[in-house]
Amino acid sequence: MEFDLVIRNGRVITSRGEISADVGIKGENISAIEKDLHGRDEIDAAGMLVLPGGIDPHVHLQMPVGETASSDDWFTGTRAAACGGTTTVIDFVEPEPGDSLHAALEKRKAEAIGKAVIDFGLHMTITNAETRTLSQIEGMVNEGVTSYKTYLTYDGFKLNDAEFLQVLTTVQESGGIVLVHAENDAAIAYLKARLVAAGKKDPAYHAVSRPAVTEVEAVTRALALAEVAQANLYLVHLSTAGAIQAVRTAQMRGVHAFAETCPQYLLLDERELLRLDFEGAKFVCSPPLRSAIEQPEIWEGLADGTISTVGTDHCPFFFKGQKDLGRDTFTKIPGGLPGIESRLALLHTFGVRTGRLSLPRWVDVCSSLPARIFGLYPQKGALKPGSDADVVIFDPEKKVQLTQSILHENVDYTPYEGFQLTGYPIITIASGKVVYQNGDFIGAAGSGRFLFRQKGDYVS
Ligand code: URP
Ligand code: ZN
Ligand code: ZN
Image 1 (cartoon, rainbow, N blue to C red):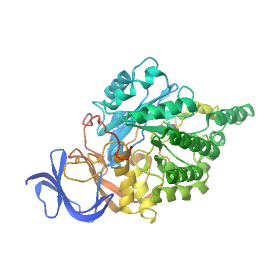
Image 2: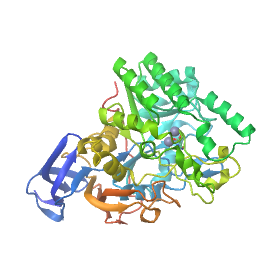
Image 3: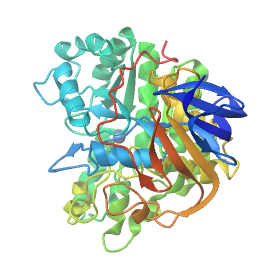
Image 4: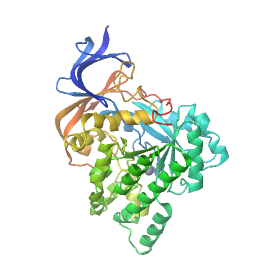
């Protein structure tokens, strides 16, 4: 068979293990994984790791927040993702009051199409449990949206327990899965008000207003409600040892719970918030960075399977002009960190090279499990004949010092400034085309497609 492109001599790593083989690509798909393949174009990957493209299940591109919006749009954000070895992102639809879910989906798709450089899916955000909202969910599943984002905090978004149960039940009956941002809203409001009244307004008080217990309580409650509703549940951006323990215990009881963490909770801690000259604002996100004491348990959860995925929760804001909005008080700092480009490399250096994660587990949490849970496998997250030809060639020995100027994110800082990495993506192939090579983006705006997602593999 004549291939359009063959990746030769690499170490092919999938969630199942490692083999030495060539990867043959025809058009937009993988056609063969075998030895001694030849094609019209060939890439010699000797000494390199060859992986399925990364899947980031949690990003916020051009997301409106108060009077501003996250600074990466669908072009710059997906470009940065591709340059970091991520070939699929899943973002969110946030319906405006009065919009049907269908209309909101179409609007969000229209923002992305023509700009996205890699394929993308969309989770639908549900902010109420009114019959007119819930009755539209089944139809959305038939439009390729099989996951539903809920919040237990944030004004305008939060659901109470009764509403959350109703959403869990409806989504479960429709064959989808609920995602939840779980923090205790009342406790946070109480603490915030007291801190502000006491004149405690520096960025570091953001974390004081959202202590670990507010996550642990809400995660434990969300798990209990999922158990009552016998529904699948995906807990986003877990940041505490207590939450991981609650997930582990619930999974042992048979609750269908999946957990996500993010590089920032594995690698950064609350001391960053104390940086002088308002620089702590660069690290304001929710849930907040925690004490470093939390981190070993999160790594352990990632290694032992309690945590299924690493998403970035990429939600960038410029330090100058956006984070600045909260100079007078932490309550006005737009919350969120950049990170879409560095996920694979950070997890390689601090997960694989430290011995915390095997290579297949690294691929699983960054690619295959997000694909499985969100109904994209084996189109995505796999290197199999018929899968989309989304492939990363990763040099496991390449030394890189992370700094904002080498990244392609549209933001004026990286929270990982100065991090020393060993291992970095050198080529990213999306739908059979090389879109990134040795530091440069060479793809095209608009080549990313909306992904019609199926029910997830693990969704009962
Ligand atoms: O602070 C954060 N994480 N902002 C993005 C929205 C969210 O809660 O995930
Ligand atoms: Zn969140
Ligand atoms: Zn988020």
